[in-house]
Structure formats: structure tokens, C-alpha cells
Length: 408
Image 1: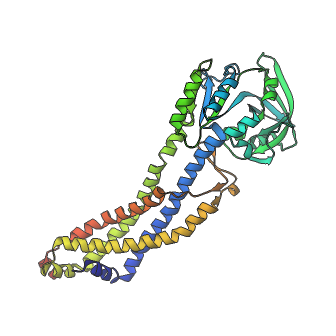
Image 2 (image 1 turned 30 degrees about the vertical axis):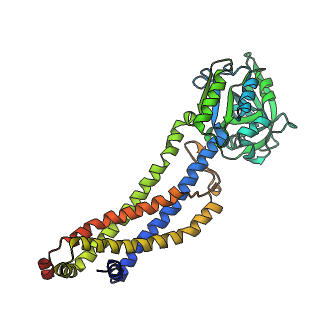
Image 3 (image 1 turned 90 degrees about the vertical axis):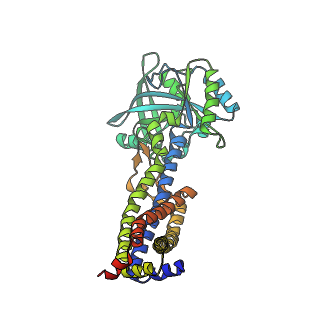
């Protein structure tokens, strides 16, 4: 028996049913190929935003600052540690963290002050490139500040407006200052958008009466160095610095988000499986119908000596023909969409911004396609087709010639 030739002929004996089955498989593959790239792109974009805009690869704190934030819990003399980190190939920048009240006109809101070294901070964070309106901090404008977009809406301010800040200084006295809104950030994260005021570190120190120390050091590793190895190096340098310092990676600082990102592959696989199960039911139904319509044919084959194994191979070959056609059609149809998602993406900025787990989504949602993201939907489709056709194949193989001849 020429099984491939017979399989090809049998597929097109009922052209309408075969076209419906092939179309269903091709459409499912088309959807899953586009979806897989979007999910990978979203997850990678979220991780990049967390590292580039929010927490860096690692952060260093003093004592129990994370558990009990306090203006007085600081990293003593951060400059030698910053130089040591830079000598080890890392990029590092110290930040000052505090809180207070900001007011403009008749509106006021609680705010989180972040004092930054503009030059060093540019090496560890891209927040300076994420200004929606206005400009980032500049040494030429020491009293200029940059605020989150939701805070700007709450206070009804825009670049050029004045901002009154009120807080309690380190010595217990009340401190206030008149600042100028220099820029408003794009969506970064819920906390940053709603409360943060970025200012020059010297202005922060003057406002809150903090001549020395830093609350936080953000560290970025070289791209070729693994996070675990870089964390070991940073911890060793931090332990050699005066004070009880703790070094935490971004995954330790944001464990829920890290677990979600690590489980993204499993999540994509589950979605694929659910969609393909529906396709598998369609294939099972179509092949069962084909078997019942050809019971007499299978009876004749069995009567002339065709083995049950050969019948199974014939049914599997028919399914393989349809699956191969669907794989080719689905992939060809998906290629233009994949190219568009990689090059242009989807503009979600017009939706007003969205976020997940408190992290803002980028205004352009790009697709990212890797060998795994493309192979996974293809391999799953092949497996689903194979298992869906096993029952019809074995049913055809078990047909007895005498019973098949009597079948009405």
C-alpha cells in the first residue's frame, strides 16, 4: 500500500469537511503565534520597565529600612561604596527618600520625595527619558522638580507651575520650600505616578536637613553578567562597608511580579492547551465521521489482508496531511502580523494607559518572537492532532470484516 498517496486521496474525498478541519487548525495556529509573541513582549517589557525605571538590578539599604522606613536610617558615607561598585564594573547611584505634603492652588496631596544625583542616576535609571511633558532635572534649574502624572492631575499643575512642599526636617522642625514643576512623567508605576516628586539631592538635603548619608543605592550590572553573580559581588562590597547593609535583587524586592514573569511560559502553555483542546474535539469529530462513512471500505481492506497497524497508519497519515497543510497556511498567514507586531507594535497609549501588578504598560506593545515562542504553538498543535486522532484510528483498526460488510 502506498499510504501517503491513499491518505492524500482520502483527505479530499470529502473536500468540505477537510477544508473546515484544516481551516480550524490553521486559524488556531495563527492566533497562538500572534498571541505568544505579544505575551513574551509584554513580559519582557514589564521586566525591562521594572529594572530600567523602578528598582534597578539590585538595591542596597541600611539596616531595617525596608521594614521600617525612616529618615534617620541611612547608608553612612555612600561615596566610597559607590566608587567601589563602579570599580567592580557596576553602575550605581545613591538616592534620598522622604515624605511630606505638596500643594498647588487649592489642591494638596501627600508626596514621596526622591533626591537624586542627576549625573549618576542617568546610568542606573531611564526615568529621565520618561518625561511626558516638560523636561527632566537640570543643574541649571536646582529648584525644578519632576512629578508623576497622576500627582500632576491631582494638583492640577503642569510644567512651569509653582509647587509648595511642606515636611518635617531631620531635626524635628517644620520645613517648607517653593519649587517649580519642571516636568511630568509618563506612566511608570502606580506609586510613582500618584505620589513621587523627583528633586536634586542638594535641594532634598537642604529641605530635610540631611547633610550626610543616603537611604538607597540602586545598582545596575553589566549585561553579560548574570544577576546572581552580580548580586554576590555587590553583597561582598556592601558587607565591607561600614554599617549593617542589605543587598536585594529586584526579584527579591518584587517577588510577586518575579513569580508571575517566571510563570509566564506555563501560562502561555495553558492558554494554548485550552484553545487546542477545542480544535482537537473538532478533529476527533471529523475523523470519527470519516471512519463511520468508510466502515465498509475498512472491512474490505481488512478482508484482503491489510493489518490493523496499517489501518492506523493510514488514519494517522490522513491527519498528518491536514496538519501539515494547516501548519503551512497558519504560519504563512501569521508572518505579516508577526512582522507588524515586532516593527510597529500595538498603540495602547490611546486607551489612557494600563498597568499590571502596579507596573505601567508601555504605550507601544511590541511582539517578541523567539524560537521557543514560535515552536511551542506548533509542537502543541501536532501533539493535539496526534492524540485526537488515536481513537478514530484504533476504532477503524478494530473493525471486523464480516461486521463491516453488514454495516448499513
